[in-house]
Image (cartoon, rainbow, N blue to C red; front, side):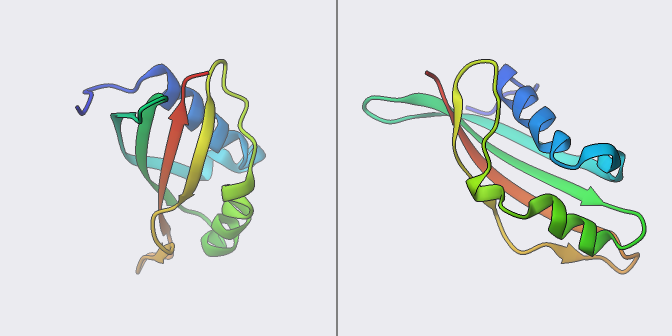
Length: 110
C-alpha cells in the first residue's frame, strides 16, 4: 500500500541521509519518495524508494562522497533500524551537470 505522505521512518531516514552530506546538504534536492509496507513471517517494516538531484560545482564528485559506504552506513533512527540500503542504479549525470541518484532502503521495527 502506497502512502500519500512521508511516514515517521521515511522522515527519519531522509534526515539521516541529508546529515551524511554535512554542511553542503543544501546541494541535495529530494525529487521523489515512495514508501510501502513490508513484512515477512516474523518482521514488519517499510520499503523506501527515493530519488535525489545533486547540484552545484563538481556535483559528481560531491555525490560520490555523499554515497561512499552507503550500504555499510549506520543510521540513528528514533526507533527501528535500517536493515538494507543501496543505490537503485548508478548515478546519472544530466546535461546541466547535476547528478540524479536513486536509493532503495528497508526499515524494520524493533
